[in-house]
Length: 369
Image (cartoon, rainbow, N blue to C red):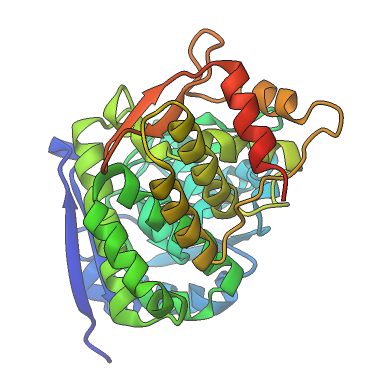
């Protein structure tokens, strides 16, 4: 058995603190599952794409510690992040006689992780769970920090709970089977950490984007580790998004409107966020917070990552009006005022509103090729 090389990032949340393990071959080393609670059963929740690739490997590792390891493969895709799919998890738990000591393991991308976490938070009012993210996006963002939930037709992630995992295991080997489009989508969530927190990291991304796209394991390890370090630092200060944590949603206000307006799954989450970051940067520029050179730099990096920077038309009659309508449904809206994460100088993010007229100008400019 290969002995995996592991880097660890710790997230400090008092009694809810946990480690994020990053490396290659991690699912082959059952040692990473030591220290987890005793249980008579484990339910691995995956999807129809990932389960055939990695479920048996994970089952074998967990089977050395737990007497019964079950696997549930959900339909794959953002369009299935619904009550109906969530109930498939509860059905499996109940049909297999699972109890409050059952351990749940999320094996997949952000959709699987969010739904498994929400099911874990809800089943018998809370059972332990572990994240084993298999996409770049989930490794650098959604698996860390305890946000769980499902989508509603009128808004993304509008139903959910804050519920922390016991551990996050980021096996970089899973990125070898990731489609190119999914890799690019994950890079959107990597890129966001530069403008909001670490300009040197943005410099590093500019110099190493080709290595990341080529799936160089050392480059990926650094990108995942630094992203997790920044997110862990933010979440430790603001676990439930009362203030600072909102900066992690850079690009998401525009991005969530794109996803809802296009229909979930038409654009990948990371694609919508990548385009949304450019839109948010251009709004920052119009508000006098950053200069044109910064916007051009961010847009160029986003394009190099293989992400769209021209927004879709959601309504041929009043496109900007449709965006505004959808953004008012965003969780960050306050009494009908849309809140944007904007860049205010070097590696500093702010959350604030903006005049509708100015937002319309940005939308019109960004949705024209």
